[in-house]
Length: 359
Figure 1 (cartoon, one colour):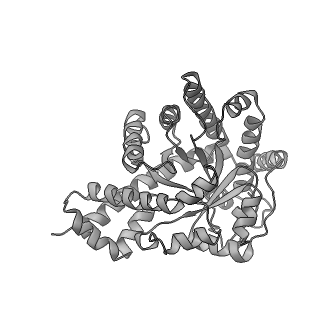
Figure 2 (tube, one colour):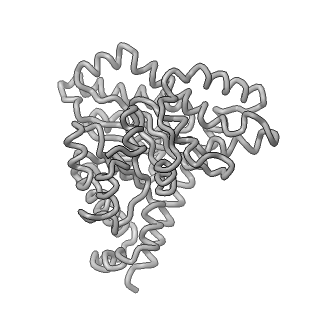
């Protein structure tokens, strides 16, 4: 069956779904149907998604009661582990038949530990061991401390989804951490062939921050986010053509794919697939909510618009700089705000569970 998502996949990009709820996870449920239809090739989750699901889906009420715990955080983690494990099982055939290219499902560490490498490492190890699925990915915020954790986790053979990336400089630092993790593993004689990783680079929020700083009608509106992402992809292309990666690839390593996150178009004036179509290219992933997945089915025009786009992206970034836009500062501010939002979402998820606990 040919779908827009499968056409995009043939160009080297996997569409993942950024949503989960328990009622979707049966063998004949929504997720299984999307996989069978070649609409999605993986899945991401976060505490905000779970908070929304738990608050609105009645099937969680019985699950909460049956756990017999009055500790809301413990209950939340149990529910998240169960659901992500079940999602991994649904994607397991795709993971197997694609030889580990597709079929990954992500669960996020507690974002309040984003500046504590040891705590992040400890929790990631626990999630990896407890859920115990080869197609699991552990989401770790790409803070400076997070990069320390990511290097260690990769060296231990734990799949990592490095999240909350906004700046090209931070992305490049992440790539270094990932490469060092693989090199440490290789030096120990450990296998590299099933150590998977993606680098989640956030997109639309950049335009959300930049557009209001530009004059009404400016031709640069709606350009910053794509240029920033394409600049990161240019860095990826440089890494992919380098000697360090060549040596690791020869040893069986899987490339760390850039993953475009926050790709729903927040501005109604923009195409609903703006941040999908403009960022299609080899060795990439795009994780989308249901509304954007629906828009892909009807609006997407798949083509590789990433390969070799770095020069044009640099020109756009220079134009933005001349207009007074400091992309690096904006990216740093967005990371700080994004991490704060992650922590708030996690606290809200715990509060949602607490409200549903038996009195």
